[in-house]
Picture 1 (cartoon, rainbow, N blue to C red):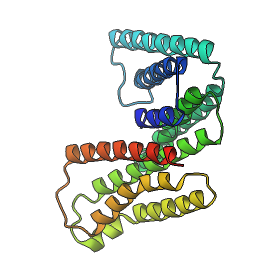
Picture 2: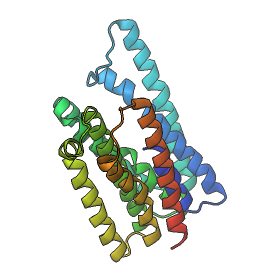
Picture 3: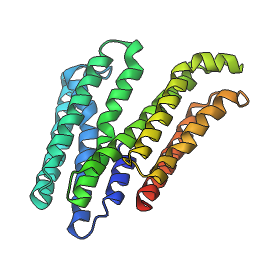
Length: 255
């Protein structure tokens, strides 16, 4: 959810020269902030992972210091080199999404999926950031790429959560009942893609990047039941994400 959007935004932005170096700095910023999230949540005690003694608190503080230094250092160099001040707008939106996710997570297990959906808004913001740095502008395409990556990520989250909840469902009727929100999500995605294609917000070829995952959902509902294997499901979803990223890039190149 972080690096595939970053890659799609970077390639669509068609970087050249020193902007490639800027993208590497952006990747360092994104990775540093991602790694910073877990120790920061542990320090603020809003995560199940918490320090149990003073030694562990010192380790958390040292970790926060290291990741903060890496992120701030890379960001400083990036802004000095590229003047990509649009990153502040993207960063503010991502920070708001992470804050919303933290609030939802504090509400208990019933809001877990909603928290993941909101958190994915922040993770997929790397698409807009990478496009802006690569192209030198934060125009409508940056936000379209961000939205496309978020819609895909949200659909993945819904699908995985549905598979987990429906692990023991064998009949088609049971799967349809358990996956009603996934069905609604697929309908919304199709309608959104139709609108985006009609308004020329998203290239028609890029809309086809969603076809494999939409077909995967339909196939699961009406296909032969199989035992849920979490590791295998994770690998399959990673491959779907890679395929989506590749098709999205090709779709933008063909416009």
